Amino acid sequence: MTKRTSRRLLALLLCALTLSGCTAKRETASPPPAGAGILPAASAEETPDPAHKTTGIGFYFDTVVYLTLWGAPESLVQEVWDECARYEQLLSKTVEGSDVSRINQSGGETITVDPETWEILHRAKEISQLTGGAFSITLAPVTALWSFTGMETNTVPTDETRLAALELVDDTQLVLGENYTVTLPAGMQIDLGGIAKGYIADKVAALIRDKAYAGIISLGGNVYTVGVKPDGSRFGVGITNPDEPRSSKAVIYTEGCTVVTSGTYERGFNFGGVRYHHILDPKTGWPAQSDLLSATFVMDSSMTADALATACIVLGSEKSLQLAASQGLDAMFILKDGSVLLTDGFEEKYNYLPQ
Ligand code: ADP
Ligand code: MG
Image 1 (spheres, helix red, strand yellow):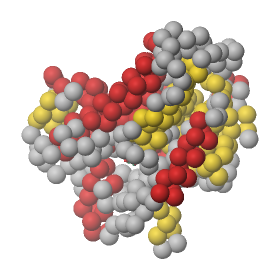
Image 2 (cartoon, rainbow, N blue to C red):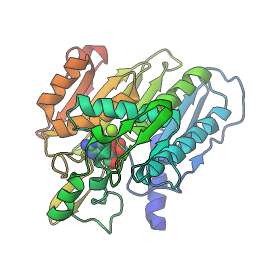
Image 3 (tube, rainbow, N blue to C red):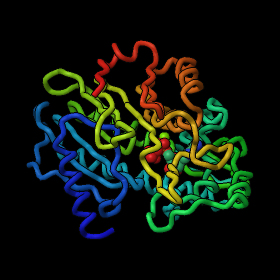
Image 4 (spheres, rainbow, N blue to C red):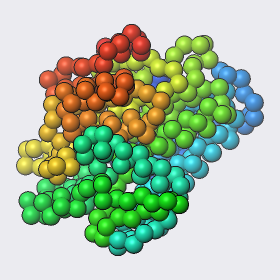
């Protein structure tokens, strides 16, 4: 990253912090220093009034994390960063010694993992089943063939390597045993990139609920709002316009729930005049080709919403609407033709405001 791009990113971050609402949009192109959370400059105050606002920016899981708190002790910001750092050490596939790395290096042996890792794996398998494999954490050997983070090394895998890697994708082969044991057949690999940030957003939201008057955590596509603004009104959450990712397609007003968006615009690269994005179809190993540009779920579990939103990009609008209805969930889908599909009652429930 050049000094110029990092300065530009910092300016963007500061700019974003001045917004009173939050947005499901992410900034990932040029990360600031890894693992660093910027602490607020405000004075320490252990029992601030509800209107006292504190903000912070961190960088974890290759993602810029925004935190805004109302009526919180200053120490809560550091507590949140400590939690993010702890989960990164546990769940990142690029951190040596993390549970995910240990599973990937287990060579078919059964290993014991942290109960939290086990819980995420359990939910991931359930969602894989629910979505007919559209969500698959064993997709890792295929994602490894694509490079969606480094600008210089973007490549399109050959058919041979892609098809060989696809042979290794099957979440039913991941066996979860008693006492938090995990067995993954030799050669297979997992990646929690489509679900872990949701789990962490849930945990951070619980921390905020316990210790602050209100707050917002925005972790990539995962936004969690806790409580209401000091004036009693709801938080507005912008749903990114996929054609214009710095602007919102709509704003919705939520209270105490998560808004999670997966979008094809988030990460990707152009090669030979074609754009390749980071959500892959586990059946083909190619970027998902459905009619959807983005999928948003509004619900209580950010972990479930995260995995479902990723799966919907693969499934397309028709199956995604059926899935949301069958689970009784509120969802919003933006199609390639620019149209928006909402589940029943969505507009009224969240004061849906097109932009
Ligand atoms: P982001 O990580 O950009 O917020 P998502 O939540 O949609 O977006 O997750 C995408 C990430 O999940 C990818 O970067 C990759 O690591 C992984 N992934 C990609 N496609 C799938 C899929 N079909 N099932 C499960 N995980 C996936
Ligand atoms: Mg996801």
